[in-house]
Image (cartoon, rainbow, N blue to C red; front, side, top):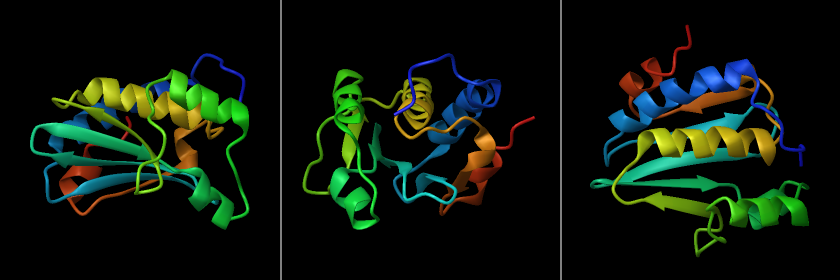
Length: 138
């Protein structure tokens, strides 16, 4: 786990773009943020007016030869991520949807728990190309 530090500028700049993309999600589409060359990710889906985020859980990491250490797990719990449910991932739900809060939580988690230091380390996928267009950083 990376020691908590200020977010690098490319990650700070990602937050408003990600919030716009999350605000555009609908029930038929998702948004996945993969860390390139890593099994780690954060993903989002909407359910009506609610937004759910998930980040990879231990069972999926262990299947890839990776794992969360105790500090990672403590950090996730202390920052609003629930322990995995039947889906196997840590999750957080915003009821109703709060795209800016969700974007901030995702980016801080990507940095602090998953070690991301630049937006260039991330790959985005969604079934909705319009959502991906909102993630273009200027």
